[in-house]
Length: 578
Ligand code: GTP
Ligand code: SPV
Ligand code: MN
Image 1 (cartoon, rainbow, N blue to C red):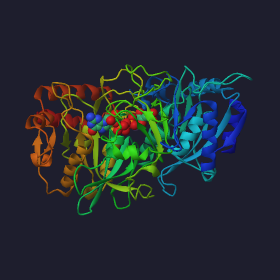
Image 2 (cartoon, rainbow, N blue to C red):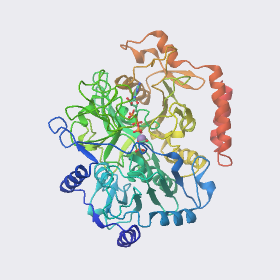
Image 3 (cartoon, protein in one colour):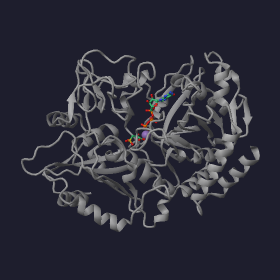
Image 4 (cartoon, helix red, strand yellow):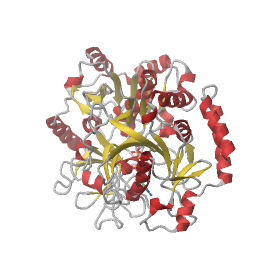
């Protein structure tokens, strides 16, 4: 650890070095500094105590997948879905790029723990960064303490890539046009350069807890997944835990915090973005949330759609790239039907013309889990929570039904492997294009996707058959011909959770289709929805399914020779069913 810190300082040449301890005094000092630097604007303390607005550089607003690399010793181990470069060459390149990159800045050392700190499943990282915004965010998103300094750790090196010459004026959001988010899966190292935003810079999140952790999971027999974890209790007080994977900005945080529309049915939250899944001594599958906070999408969040999130972000929250109201509060599209009156400053810091978006579509709130009003009592249980069902979901305007149940684990893995979704603003690129995003892990799997599919199949064999979670696929986003959503979503999604809960109990019936099982009409009793809308929501078109089958075949062939045999057999089974 000492060597790592000293080497970093010698090489990156910061003006000084500070080791974070995660205390509230330290958070206060960081916040004061950020306000002084102009990175933070303190919000109206009567309306949002302890809360701040940050505006990023307009070119640093989301994850950048083009600039994300998995540098395996052998290119084929990274697989066709990852950018890969030779690790020796890449390391040499990064070393020269990072030389002197922290001149004129303080170097923060952040010892952090992902997961319940007494859990065998937890992992320690040490992040080096020259960004106080990142340091502050890390104290919310992870557990930071000096006690993690003398343990084995995953090194995470980050710089905004903008050294300051003596007397040079800093900008509120320093960053560099050139960006690198680089992972070395064999040596378990992370280097990130040029961006200060979200998953590019808070290295505990996607870089450690997904890309590196997925590799650790493969090697050690567990799974790191892009999943929320929630608890659903029925009116009798029986509680079951569910994990659900949706691609970025496709509904994880909203489902994890959902307020139930069904009386007597209660949802509680364990995590909203990442799950680490282990087989326990009893042979069941257990999940922990490695994170300590939420980094949630702001637009669309309102008292109507997500009252629990609105409650959670009333205080001690960082808002990044949202709009600022005249009374020193925040606003974003969808928060209220009408924007507030008075002058509004948009996310770029200009007076809002009320035409362009006031908040960036990937604007976010950063807040500690302990502020979650429906936090589950086991959220920090070192053993994790037992998972009874797994859901895969995407954002699909057409062709994909509201919910499907898999016939068995292998069929469920087939669902995950075939997950496709419309692209969102969470990553740079064109929004709306449909792409394959297997298991919602396309941008986050640190190794070959074919091996990853095989790992899922192998994990199914390690779980005791009595505890094998049932697997589902959902789509809240199907649209009618006139362009509106067919399904009300949000709190009504609990109906689907209830069906899943009752299916686990197994005395609730389902209807078979060629592609999976669907609920009977009784699941929708009491919901104001037309018969036509329900029919459309569950319509399984033969032509569309044939096309899906061909696409899946084509996709699986791109993973050869690592496409698992069992998934190819699922293709045959589907073809017969169709
Ligand atoms: P990441 O943090 O990027 O991983 O996103 P996420 O998967 O947590 O997605 P999130 O819950 O933040 O939702 C993203 C967007 O989808 C928000 O604008 C939500 O308002 C919207 N959304 C979420 N759930 C639903 C739903 O059930 N129906 C509809 N129509 N929109 C939804
Ligand atoms: C995602 O893109 O899935 C996010 C946002 O959760 S970020 O942390 O930036 O990756
Ligand atoms: Mn996410």
